[in-house]
Amino acid sequence: MIDVEVVERQAMAEVGAAKTVADLDDVEQSVLGKRGALAAAHRQLGAMDPEQRRSMGRVLHESRQRLEQAITDRRVHLAASEREAALAADRLDLTEAFEAFGPEGRGHLHLTTRTRLELEDTFVGMGFVVAEGPEAETDWYNFEALNIPPAHPARGMFDTFYLELGEPETVVLRTHTSPVQIHLMEEAVRSGTLPIHAVIPGRCYRRDTPDARHLAVFHQIEGLVVDRGITFADLAGTIETFTGTYFGADIHSRLRPAYFPFTEPSAEYEITCTICHGGGCRTCSGTGWIELGGCGMVDPAVFDAVGVDRSEWSGFAFGFGIDRCAQMRHGIADLRALIENDLRFLRQL
Image (cartoon, rainbow, N blue to C red; front, side, top):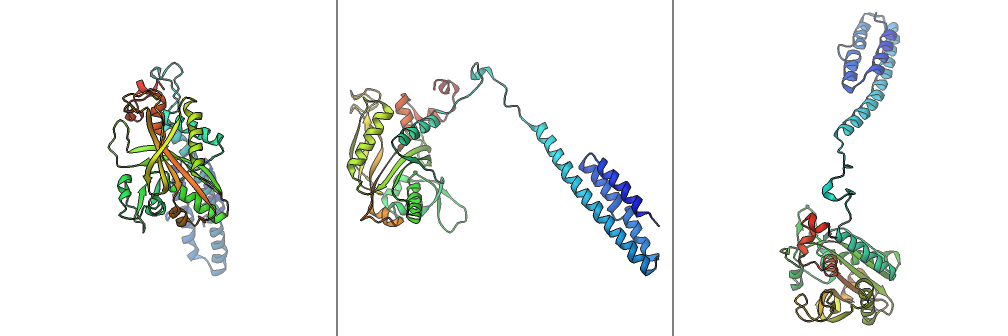
């Protein structure tokens, strides 16, 4: 009869000595496999009397359990070690400094990112909080809750990319950051946390042909204020305060009538041309003003869609492009320069 205790002791030593998972597999096969030592011992049970067979069967079973547990524990340890070794071997050294990137060999935040952070700081200083939301939205959040129902002519202004996700609702890459307004108001109504004073930065998508002033993927920031007694004068004052703070005391803002489906009344937001400072040039078509974005009082239909009591609350919203803001502040002739990754351009900023 095979000595099970000796077999187990020898197998435990081999399990502990295994250096790789492959070595451990060989040990497991030699001990626990169909032709292994324990299987051979099990076949010998048929020649024993019933009492001896029960006793020996229990010994074999317990020995097999201990060996299986030891092999499992060793396998976990070896697999982790092998994974660490593989990761170390595949690791890329990203610390090497290339002369092409300057004497320090370090990069810097992209102009668009820096502009976004500066805008956030400006608005936080004015008492706003920063909010964010998903870049893929349902049709309801991106259009319908913002008073843009199906077949509305305004949808032509926001042609976008549709996602085929097998969802019951249509899903789009958001065309503006305004869907986050809906999320904020819904949450405020649920939690009873009105009023809202928030700015919403983020990436947006439209099927625009890239040119000097347009990109298919662009960055936008907008503000939303919902409070008691808010008027159009509050909107105009907020925009003028921001303009002077961000662009400088000699740059001012003005509003002219416009149309947006989610605000009423609506206005285009223009600032003094940063190139000619109001004197008139080719950039501003001789007017002395450059359009920055849109704004207006939140349309009551939007309040109705999210359950805000329009008899108690009023509000305003405004929005403009972060890329466009960077373009005007730094005198960049073509927006496409922001996404071309030309080192000659990036080094200047």
